[in-house]
Length: 112
Image (cartoon, rainbow, N blue to C red):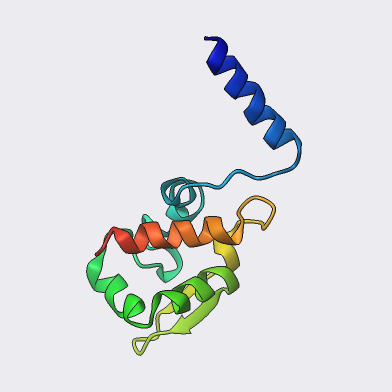
């Protein structure tokens, strides 16, 4: 129990010092990305949908990361609009670039 309390106080000290803790890809997906990627809202490729993710992954992971961080709006040949808001709508103080990258990688890993 003493070890747990020591680790808990250490965690509070880190958070209290203003340092952010890295989030896992799953945490980022669950808390940020799933709002659109679970249902396909705004034309987002659904989590685990290999057919939808395939062409995007073929562009290269760095292109996907850039779109996730900076945002992207496209119009498909059928006229459907797809919108990726910058950072998935997560504020930089809440999600670091590395956190966003972890979320994107988590979604990529789900289809590979």
